Image (cartoon, rainbow, N blue to C red; front, side, top):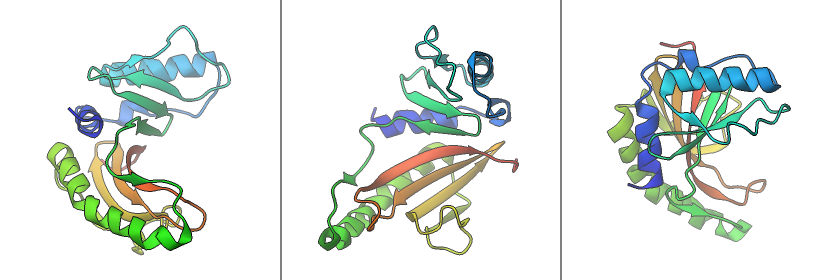
Length: 178
C-alpha cells in the first residue's frame, strides 16, 4: 500500500474528530494531554513517548498502518514522504511545466481521496472566491470534505516566485461543522 493510500485510510477511520482537538498549550502536561486525547480518539500510539520536549505543543503519533501523523491542537498533518507527483527547484521558465504536471496528476489524487473519504463538498481552483483568504492563491487545486469536527483538505500547491516547489498534500483541520 502506498503512503498516501495508507494515510488516507488512517484518517478515514476516525469517525469523530472533536475529541482530538484541544488548547494550544506548551509543556509536558499539554503534550501528555494531547497524546492522551488523540490516542483515546484514534487508537494511534505516540512515537518516542519518553522523550517529550517541554517547549512543544505538537507531537507525532503512529497509526496501526505505521503512518506518522504530526498532531497539533487544531490540525493533523500526515507524513507521506512518497506522496504523489512533485517538483523542486522550479525556475521561472519552468512554472508552466510544473503547473501542467500538477494539472495532469490532480485527477488521480482526487480519485484516491474519494475512495477513502467519499464525495467532497468542494472541488475547485485555489483562487475561487469561496476559498478563505489565508489559502487563496496558495493552492492550485483544492478539494474539501466535511467530517464530524473536521475539514479534510486535499490540495495541489501553487508554484510561483516565492515557492520553487510544487506537489500534493492533505491535512485535517479542526472545524465546528459537524
